Length: 169
Length: 275
Image 1 (tube, each protein chain N blue to C red):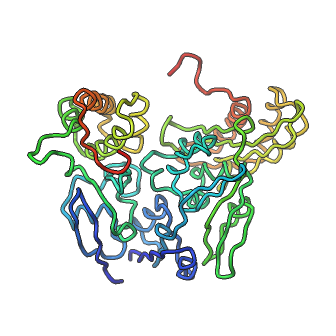
Image 2 (image 1 turned 120 degrees about the vertical axis):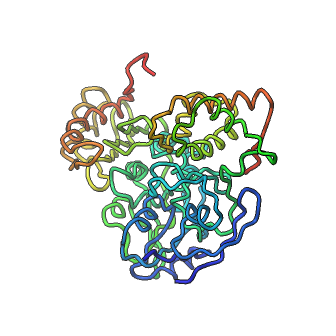
Image 3 (image 1 turned 180 degrees about the vertical axis):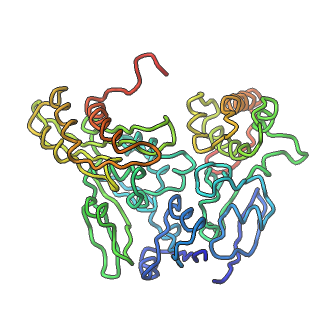
């Protein structure tokens, strides 16, 4: 039962930490790296509150034993804002569109939406629904969340802004 | 106690690493919650993530899919576009980015819709053990699993012609919901009559099952409403539905013929004009 040294590139910065057996990516991000935007909701892959990007793909970090992804590239909500703290279009659209209620699902929603907008800059409402279908909002604020994602897509198209540099972008 | 995770770098190493009592970890969407949220007695997992088992080859209409291929990878492959409705009926994009083709063979119903489809395609499953590689019919693997210290490396099947492939999944919601009833069928019509039919059902037992009575009712007959309805009614004889949080066994039995019919006649479950 030896701990292992794990290396990850998190939000473009190399990180190294010690992980005991059975540590999930979720727990590693929260407890070893202090990145608490990934939330522990159900811990069984149902709620999506722990969604982050693993090598460019949105996954639920509670389902990933961190030892199996040693060397991977991870992006969390903490890496979304610009260097001076200016909000990304998705964050701004969520904030201004009242798409955060209790806020617990928000970072997972934004991470799932981030991949969608990178792949489909002009998504349909149905595309948005599909993209966040693994993310549960128990305030049931889905309509405003869907509207915010569509709004963010429009903002990005209007400015030509691309803030996404991962694989597949 | 949380299990340790071994991360072999090749198939051979994976087989050599697997000990009695170890479990194979593929995408982890089912296994990881099981071992992290309760005591299981499992002390070691063998991860396939780096074992080189992801990838899809299609040659001459035959697809060979590595066991660690994710459902998302399968769904993106243009050569397997005919299976996209199956993939997209399973869970959410975030789960499909982890969940694997091989793993889908080992989940219990009401999950495992891809396994239902692969049963209808009569897929061949490559099983690796210390004694080497063996190819087994998927029906047996679904029924009995594999032995301790064995693992599935690949799944092979003939890519169906879109005209000969039928699939429907009844869910509580349009997205991300387990199966009430899943129907997958490969039906070949020649000279106006069904020459061969393989129909597989999900939600109709702990594991996917073939609807052999329905297949018999169809074979030799035209694929028309009357014969499809007879086959759909016959399918109930092949099913042993169960109660769960999604539906009762009674309900599953009641709606099974409806969904067999809708699958084979390609009827939409959405009334005209609805969204």
